Length: 347
Image 1 (tube, rainbow, N blue to C red):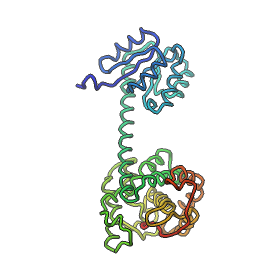
Image 2: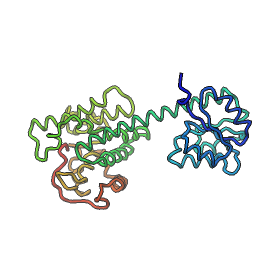
Image 3: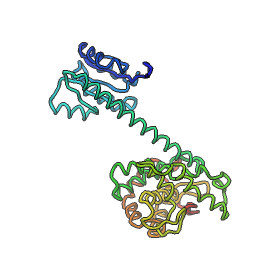
Image 4: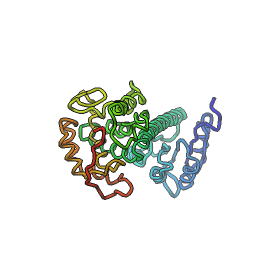
């Protein structure tokens, strides 16, 4: 049995006391309830108490339910709270307005207890699923950042390259969900560096053959950390970690894959990762100019990189450069170096 203080909290907003009483009778056995008759007060309670769900009448004095919902959805503290309109309005146009305002459902009066309970239970379950997805995504992103801090002392690289990857994924024909999975999975590309000794990962000079062999194992370590057999975003993350250092001509690691045997997401991240590494300052090199980096991509077209993807990347440089500027390293916004010192060691 769930302790009473852990039951989901529902905020009911209606200017008619009888309607609030009916909602109490319908829901009191399985939920904690808050009540108000006023839209402005509803906004205050939503921020203060962070209810799990809001049942909102449309016809309220002063501020309408539609206005309340719009305010809720523009406030980052309340935007994720699902809102169900509960109203006597039954015109389909009213429902459209409600959904456009940000509601997840629309229940018409007179209220049917089974319908109210079912809709509330359904949307609380969906909200819980969304919360779990968000938590999983947060863990994935933190792991990606952990690998970057161990290596380059910056978390902006994974942000920039993941957005570059999404742009290229859309250009390559991915739908919105696939592109979002790519965006969220790409930060995990080098998570396997967590398993590489610092004496190798942070060595200022060239690596000897044995050290280089150890460093290369980070691709398989990363794939092992993420795990195989997943679907969706984690499956994409696994493929990226394992294959983003493979080369189109088959001359790279860890498995010497070539051509389309390399998953599309691995080929995309290879371009996004190298472009950002080249155009970013590192302890061992100054940032390359954008033009020098693009010259490198053109030169490696069809050998290191998928030629068609390079062409798509080059064709979308305005979007790429906008991302680069938005997530620029401190002190480098609006500038670029031209000292071509050393290509990224994994390139």
